[in-house]
Amino acid sequence: MAGILLVVRTLFVITIASVSYQLTTIIFNRPPFDFINVFAIVLGAFLAITLIWIEIKYAARFLVGIFTVILGLFIGFIASNLFLQAMFLIPHIRILKEQITPEKYIQMEDVIRVGVTFLFCYLAIAILFNTKNRFKLLIPFIDFTKEGSERFLILDSNVIIDGRIGGICDTNILRGTLVVPQFVLNEIQILSDSSDKQKRLRGRRGLEVLANLQETSSLKVQIDADIFPKIIDVDGKLVALAKKLEGIIVTNDYSLKKIAQLHEVEVINLNALANAVRASVFPGEYIRLKVVKAGEEVEQGIGYLDDGTVVVIESGRKFIDKTITIVVTNVLQNNIGRMVFAKITD
Image 1 (cartoon, helix red, strand yellow):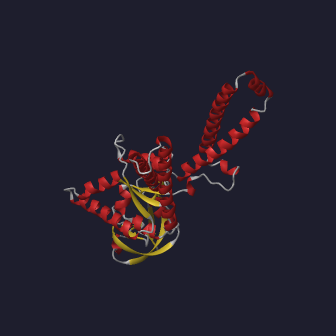
Image 2: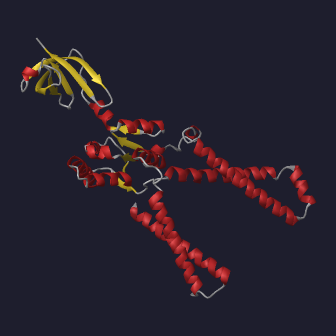
Image 3: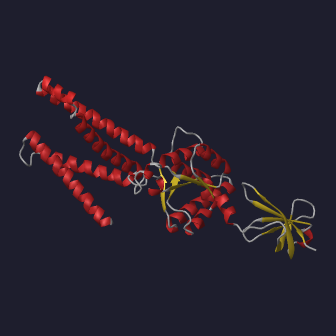
């Protein structure tokens, strides 16, 4: 496929350069190897290569928009042509043709054709852009929704430093391209150079996670260079980037999730995902569990389920480092995670 695309791009460059050369020879009527003809070939090839560079860099990102414009132009040209043919059959137009000179009638006809064609093309493109989801009802085999294009998953600094994103990518649950914004990368680099030990460890962990993602992840990882200098806070930059790419923010920050939802930006919350795949426990269920440490309250013990869920055991402090049978009394679920309360069985 890549070889075929290379051949097509090469033919495109040669064709544009040839067209540019032929236009120059017709306009200026110079000898074949005159300077201006050679310059036209170079200019044509440069323009073609520039268009190819734009296509490589932006076509995948704006695939839906490009296809919508092309289809809108196609529909607009057909509709305007049919409308013009019907309009020039009106008797009053034919009578007007006989009353004015042929030159003026041709000029009037050209102006009307240009105006009507642009009007119908604009209407078709505008309607398609504003009715992407509903237009599929009229043309079932065309899907304008962004699921048909490349899916961008925008990572924030918290989810990168967290490190779970690598394991989740390995499960093939996520589909699309992982986007690391430049301003997020700058934030992690600042942390890695911090004089504070904890911040420095967090920053270096984030850089290691990114390096592992680039080397081992089944998903493509790309850096987005847009830093949105007019927006101060990082959360606002992430929302702006998500709107620009029509992407999805991947985070474990509850505040960022709420901000994104207010701006109607899709969010994948890793904490919510982790909670969703955890094994369920119910009040009244009996569990064998090791008491690991003392709790905050008097006589409380703390244990952990296999998925890391904290279990607070009433009167469990005296059983530290022992495995006992407990019965679940309550399960609390919040935005941070899940907490299980239990007591020792008789």
